[in-house]
Amino acid sequence: MAHKVFIDGAAGTTGLEIRDRLAPRSEFELLMLDDDRRKDPSARQEALHEADFAILCLHDDAAREAVALAEGSKVRIIDASTAHRVAPGWTYGFPELIGRDAIANARLVSNPGCYPTGFLALVAPLVRAGILSMEQPLICYGFSGYSGGGKALIERFEAPGAPAFRSYALGVEHKHLPEMAEYAELAMPPTFAPSVVPAYRGMIVDVPLTVHDTANGYGHEKVRAALTDFYRGSSVVTVAQEPPGDGELLLTTDAAGWDGMELFVIGKAGDHDMRLIARLDNLGKGASGAAVQNLNLMAGLSETAGLAL
Image (cartoon, rainbow, N blue to C red; front, side, top):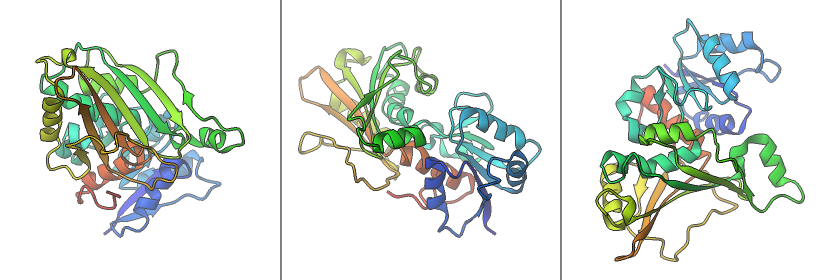
């Protein structure tokens, strides 16, 4: 029997991409609301109580409302908003870091943010291995396609006179910082400099380090080896063993959807400096792909079923 799935917020960018991934799959039956009912609390509550799984693709307040509407039901929830990422009782939906069994057995799963996905993939394993201290101040640069900003930002970047580059969160505050510190086990969040580029999808997260930042004076080769060991066997996260041959990493304007993530540790023998870089799709492993990966685990299916890898 197919699992019933309700995507609350299916008309948004993340919801549409999740629906596209699930619609061809016989393991799932999608519960749909007509346009005139999709914001009706009673209709949403009915769908939440009928579903086996619900994926919330909503603003934070609406996500909290959905959780309240689901009270008393059997539905298991994946929340793609920021509302519950560091909330008690929720399991953080990053299987490679948190553990696949923890997600498979959870009722409430919070999908990671797109920037934190890249940052945590690079930093959390190094803190766990003692290569980076939890007290180490870090800098994180992020470059994202504009689809991550929702309909308003999409319209802004696709209108005449669109920006060529957008740097934001200039007050050194960002909604992703709590989860970046929490799940990297850092004493303080990184100094975070996010920006948006004129590509619909794609993301690069860049964490510069020096050997003096590492607890044992490790250079880039040992850092790369530690990440390689951590992600060994993963079909979703890979660690490049060589830097890009042309010396550059690109985001392109016509990129296809992708649910994987590639990590790079770039440096030269004898140099003090290195760069830890994650390349991913902000709508893939950074959002919709991650939700489907978590749903697969919660439904007892192959982790990578239906993913574009």
